[in-house]
Image 1 (cartoon, rainbow, N blue to C red):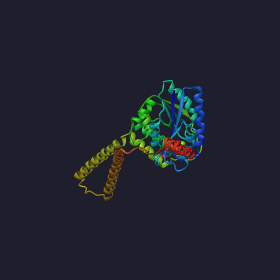
Image 2 (image 1 turned 180 degrees about the vertical axis):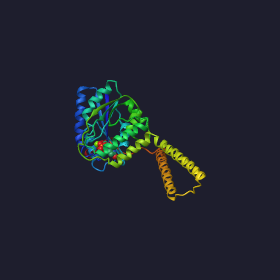
Image 3 (image 1 turned 90 degrees about the vertical axis):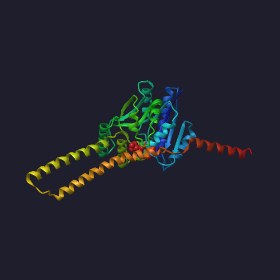
Length: 332
Ligand code: UDP
Ligand code: MG
């Protein structure tokens, strides 16, 4: 028997979960018909949802033994959700996907074939268009990938997604990266392994709304840069060297002018401008240093990436207790 774990991080997904469950079980059935040796587990992560997502998990776990869930004590972010899912999945193969059906379950059988053939360790989808996304957002996304790939040794494929079918070996490699500031797109690529990219056309969310605003995406992309590149630090040094060079040339010119023409130094405005410019440059560079320092600070604290409030095991225990109590009342 081979177990496939399907990990699904969820944040306020009550509207789309029943739909997702219907679609994914259909695919699971299809795959089992074709490969009777396959078994499945569905591992949902409740990332501190404020709606009835957890209640949905309760219902699903009660009627389907393949459903497991982990509920966080608060919202820790999708990265933490994915990490918790990978860490707790028991499968020989592990799939990560979103709950909103933007990652169509229909790709999973193909992904399985690619990985099973032994030719690849991971299969993932790659967006070939950005329809349904604003122009500004697409522009920033494309620029981000361009800059990222230029300044970082880790190559991140434009349009690659978190929808992945992976072997246990690759997941163990990902789990061995215990960093607190997680940027999965970079981590997936950093660990290496042979990856098959399946092109696909972007689809809209089936229901509910996205939790990502432009601001949070922008912040996330900066996280990615600071987590996978030290180029900003080099930029700070470069700016320092450049401004020294300019200053040196200016000093030379001034001294020569003074010796040759006996010009008194004048120009209050220029002085102020230069002070402001250099001051600004210095603050900018300290800011870059600060970014790395703050990341290091968070890493050294060694805080847990997520905290669990309940899992399907506590639900089963509660159910058992209830049953025991009922039978005690019936047969005292
Ligand atoms: N998600 C999460 N925690 C968060 C935000 C999002 O677990 O803090 C989940 C969400 O439920 C969904 C997936 O991450 O399953 C992708 O989120 P979303 O669809 O909002 O992002 P988008 O597809 O717009 O990038
Ligand atoms: Mg989505």
